[in-house]
Image 1 (cartoon, rainbow, N blue to C red):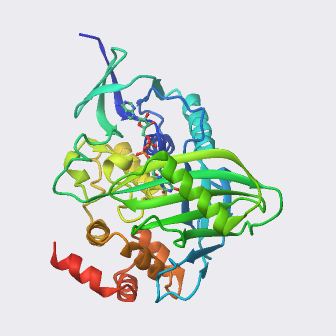
Image 2 (image 1 turned 135 degrees about the vertical axis):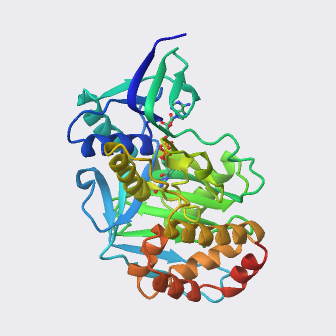
Length: 386
Ligand SMILES: Cc1cc2nc3c(=O)[nH]c(=O)nc-3n(C[C@H](O)[C@H](O)[C@H](O)COP(=O)(O)OP(=O)(O)OC[C@H]3O[C@@H](n4cnc5c(N)ncnc54)[C@H](O)[C@@H]3O)c2cc1C
């Protein structure tokens, strides 16, 4: 039996959620007494993700790579209720972009300087309520365990609805100025893949450079060459017929699921990040929530309290889960209608109400206004078939 090393907190996985929790613990622990183990074998040489979120605060000021005040949404060409592209003034919010490589570098700089954190460069092979075994033979015990590993049955759980948000992104550069760097395209439904909820997302970071992602919300994935074909067709048809250079590529699959993530949590053990249900099931966003949830977890640990039951506990979370499950059901039963629903969603009179709705920060009154503006039939059908 290897000798166990004991910690106050063992964090399994040092991606977005693990690093956010570790930073939040270092910030909250004014007495500098907590001992933390951060377990992850990965290296951080790539910009593997581009995180975007909306916010009105100045958090992460120095890490923001780019931000936008305006967004546009284009309807699908067969959407007869939709007349034209909708331009949205996001203010007082800003849509913000952080490159993961910048976040990792900044987080690891702070973590490596702290004598409170041991980085264990190994894969956790067994994780229990109080201990973690790693593939390098180390055994770690913790009063608290925060675990980023996805539940084994996430993709096979028969009682939950699973839709994948999957995409290929290209950072492209063109010769002549083309974009307004203060205006991004949230969803462009003009080039759809068959009868599916599929769209392009365009994030110009200068007049000549933009990240363009072809994205689908469907239950099965495509072949790599299909994403390539779709993204290049979109660029040719709607962006430019001139030559362009691909400077970087990004791809991903984000589970949008009604899976009961909270069933794995207990008083001192909690799944975090995607594994903890922090990804909003109807949008695939989790960056903002990971800031909020990490703070709440760190505050509880510093006070030696039980971990807060986050996803699926408070009424606000339950309410979001209810809305998300309805939308997932609609996307499962009639995938193509998603284009119409999302377009209508972004037609709200003020986005100041719609953006908090996406984060679950809206009031019941704001929720009602938004729900009443959406096509009723698919929601009623989804409600009846629950
Ligand atoms: C390409 C991409 C782009 C995204 N863009 C956005 C966005 O714009 N906005 C947004 O809000 N959300 C976005 N998301 C969704 C979500 O915010 C990210 O997936 C986010 O990284 C989730 O954080 P996480 O910590 O759960 O997972 P990750 O960041 O993937 O981290 C998990 C970590 O756990 C480690 N790990 C796994 N198993 C073990 C093990 N057994 N032992 C030790 N370590 C282990 C991995 O090595 C990894 O470092 C995006 C997702 C992807 C894939």
